[in-house]
Length: 512
Image 1: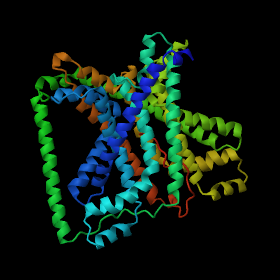
Image 2: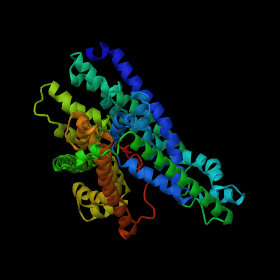
Image 3: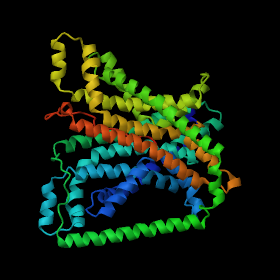
Image 4: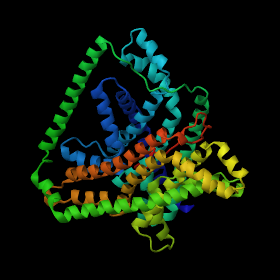
């Protein structure tokens, strides 16, 4: 208790900065997310392509790498440095906006197609249809899932602590310098986040209850075959979009050239076989941590899902608390508890790899538990009744009937969460785990090669995006197979509580 009472000022300053980061990042992410969401459903092909490109690139890049670029690469392009907190807000906003845009796009698809048709019948163009008719109704539907995005944003603010921003995630390092045990300071920080997440979760549940009765049939038709004037207008808008994008790209290339980012010396470092080998070793470390964590998360998720559905309250209640606890604590704090906290109370043998893997398993296992539980509840009741009728006990019904169907049904969502886990391995960079981002930062800081942080970030970002896109492609493939499978179809599926509460990750909205 002395750790808290003796340092109330530090705890207050840390959580105040966390709330500031969260508040302004949420506002800017919401504004940008609405714009990108509108681009994603635009009838103008270049606009749709621009929105899709932005979402696919940023959403598949670890938040830690986004921070690395803005804190170390952005100033080298000759732009003014606004300070650590504004840079953190920019990084969080750009990253979170991709998840906001997808929530907005999903909300647009819940608006009945007749609304858009009626607005066009009275002569409203696409822009006015979107701003006056579609978006106001879409916002009502997306408020609950949007809260999940903002909860993940709150937890993602801890990444800023690894880049010298004095927020709640940095309290541990400051108290360690004052001689306080790491475990105590981290537990108090974790408790603070649990309280903040609990408040946002209560708001989310209240909003879910209010909008549940107002849901409308879904449609993906927002615009139909355009007329002659609309075709001309869309072509003009397409040309304008292409010109603007080309101008922005030309400006970026100019800034890169002006600041020497195309210098042969900067890029020559990455032509050495030893450097390439070390970067690939970093990628191997990333994939090995991800592989172990993915298997462990799936196993833990299934165990927790079954436990939460147990008829015995002495099992279901503790498992429920366990699940909610580790979903509420930021992943970086969990890794820090493993790496800094346990050794401070005498636990020896902790390595960065173990800390990263255990943190990923606890966090993603808790998230997957809710996904799998939703899948089990979605299995038609007749399946279990038929199993009981032929004499199977409850354990065998769960393991042989319900779990296999639940995993199969929720496979796209499970793979999507594993994409978040893959990006979250980059948090190991902050606790000195020598994964891909660690190697990128190391080589990007080589002053003898003119500090090639931007070339290093481009190489690392390409590798991360490529790996994440492969997993995302698997998720889409699994979803398409499930849609074609007659076994997966169910005309009247039961309500699935919590199915839309998937976390975006902590460097990974998930959707923390």
